[in-house]
Image 1: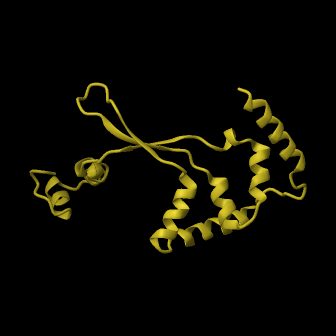
Image 2: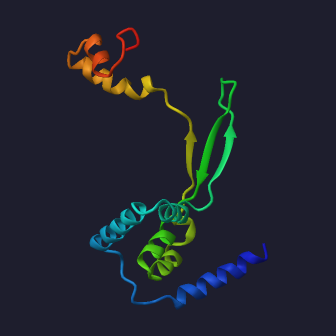
Length: 152
């Protein structure tokens, strides 16, 4: 509790000292940063992993009970930090002032990702339905996916 007033004073001092020449990111500049990110993610695995680690920050994985089921599911949680990644990619400190201006809380929302395998029949169901609605028979749908019609 004692740190909160001090942190607020620090944020206010940093806000007053921020660069006055900061301009909003334009569409072209955003495209440039995204293409740089794409280049980084296309590089060797260690480089791409570092970029992803910078974006996601720490990832926590835990089990959650599922109502009505015996087994819990695994869930990953992280809070993306896009400003830190953009700052790293751009080699500029422009994003620090944006972060101070917006406040850290407004730029970060926790992401929850269930870690579960979706059965193949569930993945293919929308495509099978689309083909059936166009008039394809069960036999033709099954054979086009290399399945026996009994399983389609």
